[in-house]
Amino acid sequence: MPIRVLPDEVASAIAAGEVVERPASVVKELVENAIDAGARRIEISVEGGGQRLIEVADDGAGIAAQDVELAVERHATSKLAVRDDLFDIRTLGFRGEALASIAAVSRFELISRARDEDVGRRLVVESSGGRQIHAEGAPPGTLVRVRDLFYNVPARRKFLKTEATERRRIQDLVVRYALTYPAIAFQLTIDGRPSLQTDGLGDRRAVLAELLGSEQAQQMIVLPEAEGPPSVAGYVGPPSLHRSNRGQLTFFVNGRWVQDGSLSAAVHQAYQGLLMVGRYPLAVLFIELPPAVVDVNVHPAKSEVRFQDPSGVFSLVQRVVRATLLREAPPPEFAWEPGWGGEPGTPGLAWAQRDLAELDAPDRSAGLLPAEPRNADMPLLRAVGQVGTAYLVAEGPDGLYLIDQHAAHERVLFERFMRAQREGKLESQRLLAPVVVELGAAAASVLEERLPLLAELGFEVEPFGPGSFQVRAIPSLLDRLSPERALHTVVEDFEEDETPLAAEAEALIAARVCKRAAVRAGTVLSLEEQRQLVRDLEACASPRTCPHGRPTMIHLSVESLERQFGRKG
Image 1: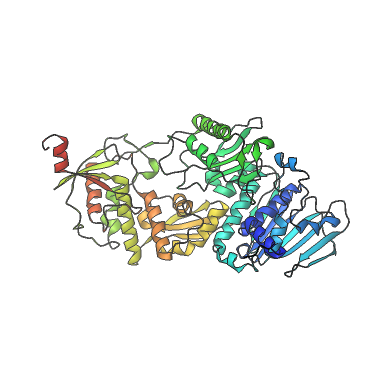
Image 2 (image 1 turned 45 degrees about the horizontal axis):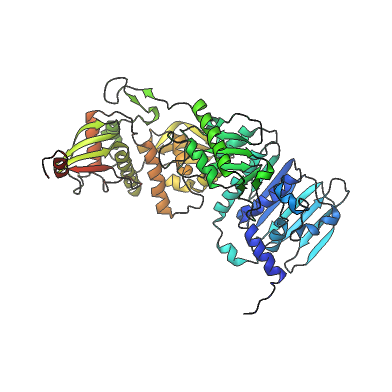
């Protein structure tokens, strides 16, 4: 086939595909332009998950009248002049591609007025590629209005997630930039409803509450201030705060939000020995380095950087975070509570102290769950003791069984919970007084979408202001689980792209809530409680795994024991 030069509109669409991946990409580019322009206030409005409308207004320096039309040309920028400037970048934007790329895939409008000019300019980029520009009265600063994103690239629209997911990504992005630039007042409005508003007074802790929720934000540990660059500042969570993924690891390098696997690994290594396997910490880190040692010209979206000395940066982050944790992270809290088996003064996790016998008491289960026979697939077991305050030892007809008490209790609670819900017998326990729970902006959005599902599972939860929810009732089977932990459990482990079917989401939420409610490792059980748990496990439909697929028991056959003791060759 002959080689040809691509038409301008095709080249622009290709360039736009690299820069504008989704609605959040548009918000990111426009917010970064506003920050570079010295804005003290940035207002963002979004409709339809950003596909219908994105509007970003700032009170920055504005664009001079003669430059307004030039601003949407490809590779037009005020931030670079010569090649050497690439090695000393001190602004968030520098490529000169953002506005041109956005205008190529949307119905684009820009209104701007420089501070030293009396009248602004309004620029409209038409779908045919033409432009209209005329004078217009406007306050100092810039307003960019993006309508019908990807209207002329329908294939790109097909790859977008749901409106709710795209909305959460925008929320997440704006909160993180508000956290990095606390001296700028941010206002985010989604579908006509205020979602985020910061005062621009420089209080990062207040903005952190928007990201994590006030309860968890208060637990975050502040890294000590250090002179630099190089320096690392920000917040890290105590080991008691953790997630099942790296979604709450946030890094800003020289004020730029980046995604970097080596930085994540450095933080995770700093928590070595402090977190369970498969769990990840929370951290918001602001890393300052000399511009000359950071290459930001790696990807058109500017979300990746390359360090001149990656091992040195890794070591710096790991060392600062580790030292802070060892110095300030509080040890796990243990409580001494009687009535849990064993002698008075037996240690156990206070919030997890649950009386297994009480769960099976007639006054709690009568009329709720019918008695079921023992599962025929399970051998008849006899509990004989507990090992390491985590595993039950049981004797069976064909050998020895070690039972994980936490996983076993998870399975018991989950099957009771789902059976009661399926049979329409799931009762709710009303709280004596409603409990108000505050969540971060993104978590609040996730929870709000799942309120109807929570109602089906026995929760009574209603919105109570931005980021706040009022809990009036929880399922009776889980009435020992605090409402705060129940709601955090519903949202904390969900991936932003996770869109399970209703039945799958129902089981997933139930499994996670039951996991938090189950008796923990480290809790001493009396012999009667051990026996009761074994009987409950025997009655389960799937007794050999917990709801998450982890085994509840390990079997040591008589034959293997005989071989270990040398009775058989």
